[in-house]
Image (cartoon, rainbow, N blue to C red; front, side, top):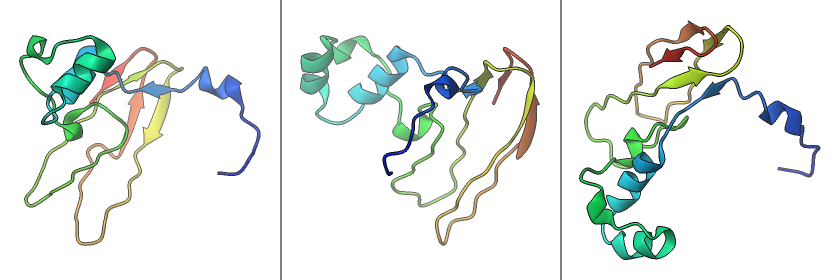
Length: 116
């Protein structure tokens, strides 16, 4: 929003990264009904190569979106620390009418360490 200054140096030290592979993205895209022709057209990859599919909620991304939540759902995210030893506090906003529990809410992670 706005036309502020971009500090590109900060992008070189993101801290935590959410590792997601090309194959995981392809499995997600190929799992969308009717997407095979578009995936082949844009990537040159045949969806038959990907035996399993990944739902959007299961992609290892910083955000969590669940389109039709009608019961409880457990979602896991994994991070890798590419910064120095740090402690992080997890924050979230819950939609009206939804309850959510996050474990852990605070964690220490060493350089090169992984956490789920």
